Length: 226
Length: 226
Image 1 (cartoon, rainbow over the protein chains, first blue to last red):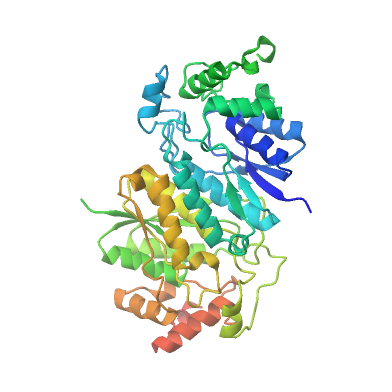
Image 2: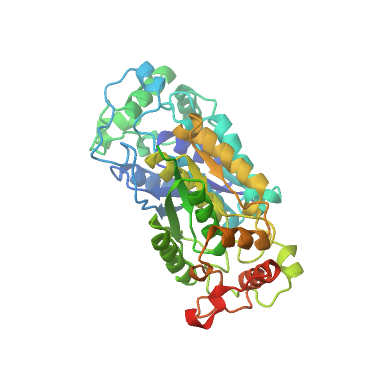
């Protein structure tokens, strides 16, 4: 019987590579994406395109938390722009959403338990990740303990977290995605939701650096996707 | 400056005692309750009454997960009834909601981070808890690690989980609640949402055993609250 993976698919580049990694490992993938009041819906549209492209099921979970606390969900806060790589890496950014990955992983664990899944995939990685505390291996190991101890399937040794990109750089992730056939033009990284990537927000800057270092063009920047 | 606690307040007896414990410790309490498709709204009404009684703020978080997997949220599943204490304790019950406490605690951590809280209180306890894996100390210790590692305030040593009832029996919790002045007639434990407690579901049976062993009457059973 084929193993089942719940994949957190935001529609960004990293989660797309995580999905293709899970498919390569032979999992039947069931994807989750969250509608939690992001500034725009472009990432969610990207998740839908990626799910359709891979023939995987995508569930959209609506989360309407009665507080904000991040420039990623609060349009009255300014997004950081035009920062250098060292500025981006030096402190936790205003785009950090309090406990976001913990909420997403908890809900993924609930879904995984309900459908009898074997693994939960998350495309988190620390390097180039704006210093988010919930993108570190030590944090994900701790969440794995919670899954092991706090769910029936975890207790039975049947459910674990997988984070295959955690130690990789953006360059490596793009190289891996290229080898797995990830359609990068279907992914969306920009924090703004304009027609084209702004190329000024932290996420655009890190993505551009990754493609440059990988020696590959970013197909999303091709005019035909404008 | 007074410390702030986020309190998970379901409206059940245990969470009411947790709230009064936090107040006794001098915290300003901000309560969260979850509207996650329970079979009835009586527990939520109890949470509102308890918040009003204590003059604490209550936020209701609506969670509409597109799956069920528990007799507590799926009305097509039968609730276990008329079970003995040993039957209740012998295995994980159908009333177990997959990863429920993990989801609640993750969302509480997000709220706590946003408002600058110092502690998160949860009234979980293992004895008499229908064998839920997410009501054990080892599990809550693991969640505490996640809070420490996955939030800004946790990393700064400013946010921790507190579970003051974890090692207590229902009898002890009722005794503690009595000494703290908890209005037990404002709490609701029954899994069914009828006018009066059914006295047959696991939760009613455990509550009745607790009051019996504590040598106290359950004021909720007084006819004036019918």
